[in-house]
Image 1 (cartoon, rainbow, N blue to C red):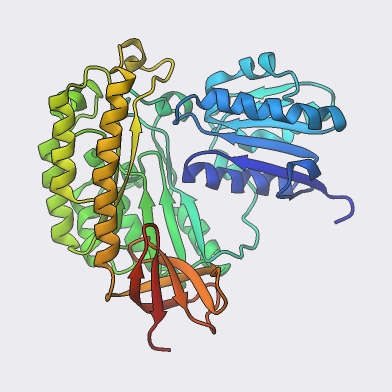
Image 2 (tube, rainbow, N blue to C red):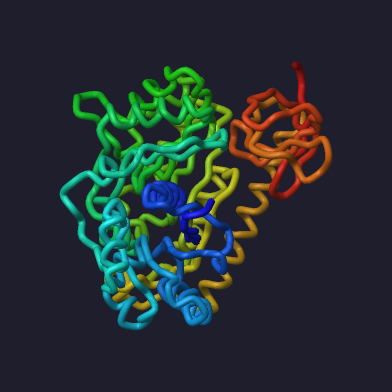
Length: 438
């Protein structure tokens, strides 16, 4: 590795950030950087940030503060901040933390080589533009992968403007990537041994092609025809973009896995309206009925916010009623926290102790449903894609069709194999299984 520079990337948040980190690593790889898993060994540290969680910016500043001793020890160390906090904070990051050499937003990271050249010349670099060119066209071709599953971004940005969310401001308007580029990238992944592709987007089911009738369901069927691609998933979806063809794909496309993450946020129509979600609880429930009619064994997951400004006990109970009506395999739930610049940030949130109690009650119900879903799998035969050796000798680990983590007794198993197993036991966050057949 003589002559190579070492790059450490810390990735916060969503799968899209994981994908972006991979592409930034590829971009910097063309500049001579190789990845390291230790910041202490790095010639460049890049924090790829997320603005969704509470106090996201302050957590980034805390991490930057912890890098100060390393920068003092290695003055030539380059430090960069990328992602949504970079987009939201911009020049403020370098004002508060002079050790930061470059700040790049999620739509501009294809410009990293030019930014690094400026840093090498002794300048600070900042790029939080929404450039008109397609960043994906300027990124280097993917190199060899060893993992059997991969992310593929098909759509970016959001036009929904939910009252609590910063994504439209940090990721920009909804943009769908062209069909030919997506198919080329998917074939390239398949040629490198990828068996499972997860299609990504802030509103992934808002993706559309350049001709009538070409929505996400159509794209999934096209990718299912690629030799080597056995499994397809997609995330994250908005209920308003679940069209008839995409629902039908869950029933007629064998490669589309029986799992769907479909955030609802609340079960109260009054709160949904205040959130600017543009759907009602009843519309969401009818949508779930249609999806389950197409694929009865589908596992559903969701997102919930409690304590949104104005939420009453009645509103919260409506959320609990919706959860009971749907029956989730798992769900993410959070106490509302304001995001600067969003409409809801100007409103008074629910008292913390009330929000804490509601979150505790909701999570107890969701945990109960998750446990029931896990236990319902015992005795069933499912597919598992082996991702890595298990923790115990003779064991392999991977994801089931329903995205459950599964540990399989299979001394002869190999990473990348797609096998049939019988589930033998359920734990809170994983399943145990034995392989069946050859």
